Length: 201
Image (cartoon, rainbow, N blue to C red; front, side, top):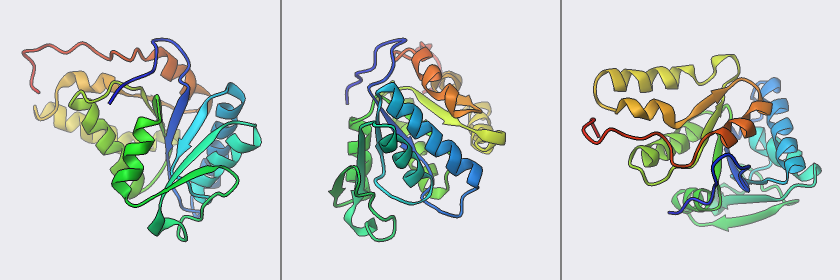
């Protein structure tokens, strides 16, 4: 796994993890579409799960309509459920593992928008890889109204219980507007926080 992001530079490709449900709060849908538009107008390629529904579809439509490049990655068994967005380049793969690996490899940074158990599973794996120092790519949560606060509270709990190192708190950022996502990524040096070698792994 290699990082291509340079400190304080705009990432070339951003992976977005988010919900695939059309039942999501309309405000979340609007924010996802707006973030896609921001990516498109900024010349940043969107990498996402390939679906045409929910926040996934909204972010892809926003990027595509703004003239941006988009790469979707969809497991074959989900093509009906998550409805391929045929207007953009899409890779159809065989497994969830393959999907996540390609999305990781094709991205310089990660934006996490509101989502359910699927989004949670994706981001926890990504955070685990960061804790294991398998990557140092920026991770930025869009957390309107404190959406992701329960996750951050759980992370703090594991740190307080000496199960996760305290430096791990500095491996992500949380913002309350989608306009703040790219600036936050630019501010995160790829090298990440320096770890005390005597501290708990």
